[in-house]
Image (tube, rainbow over all chains, first blue to last red; front, top):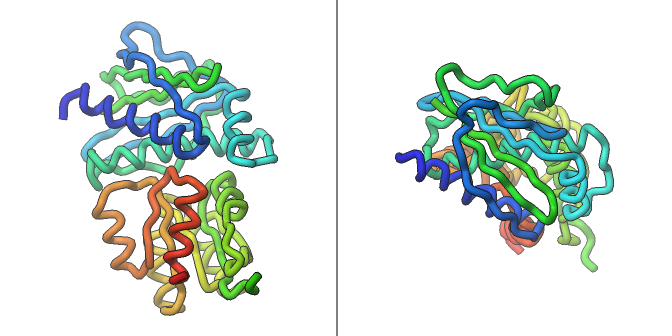
Length: 149
Length: 124
């Protein structure tokens, strides 16, 4: 599978997630490789570790305000830190899990983990370059970070 | 309005998803009776609450959904289980059905898709 096709799998997943879950479409900006600087993280980052035929991670990072509005759109009233963390993890989980439609059962994913700190880099696999998919939803900006060997 | 005939247990490690499934249920035949965060909790809750329907995530800590489906069906062959998972490949769905699940709904899902799947689950 080409890199372009792989990225397309995740872009399709993002678009489907927003239109289905919060009934308001998102737009994805141009995906790009993080070459010199590691991708900037937002308030909440959910991380899925990938193992099996591919190894690495899938992470969804978003500001608190965006996740709060998403919860509201889902009729959720609990805007606690725990629920915001939970949503970031669940989005990462859903986007990584959906990728198995193309990558197959050997694309094994972990349960979501909340990355504790914006200032600390994600645990990228060595000798790999993260792909950043910018996500625009309403006036908010999030990122999906995919880093696979 | 008909009285609830089905007792629903929701199993998912995400609190957001557990609460969303509880809220989204529009079927008067289905009464929400409890929620569990993983397969081990689900087995305990099943013994305590005697649900007739279960929604089951697959990727969970402690005991995953596939193992839990097999154990629940062994314990209660009449139990109807709807697997709700982000794992979108066909083999995962087939595996869940072979272990005894009655249906499979892929995440992400809309409230309407959830209610349609629940309606099918109870044969309405």
